[in-house]
View 1: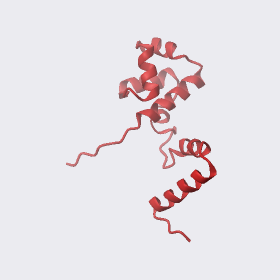
View 2: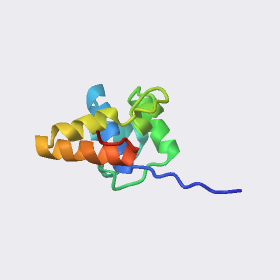
View 3: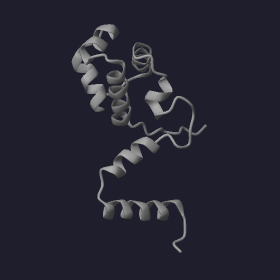
Amino acid sequence: MEIVEANIDYKLIGERIKEARRKAGISQEKLGEIMDVATAYISRVERGSSQVNLKRLSQISIALSTPIEQLINGTAVESKNYLNKEFQDLLNKCSKDKQKLIYNIAKIVSGINFA
């Protein structure tokens, strides 16, 4: 049996938690109270400097009335395009020259031939 390691982006999950918390109008302190954890823990999770386990992720999901899939992969349903929003946000922060470079790199990585 082969064991496959998953690359979990805790920083990205933390950003999604922070966004969901803000949309819900809940402070870090209030979320900490609901979950019975320190505010510092919530802060570390949102920064991605603390790994969040499934139990805690489930508690956050329930407290924020947000599907756990939304926190993990950015969509409420399974999707191949789960990074679209994050990728678009990243591109919007880049200059036109950097956007073109990223586009060309993406074409190379995806195996698309340049015309």
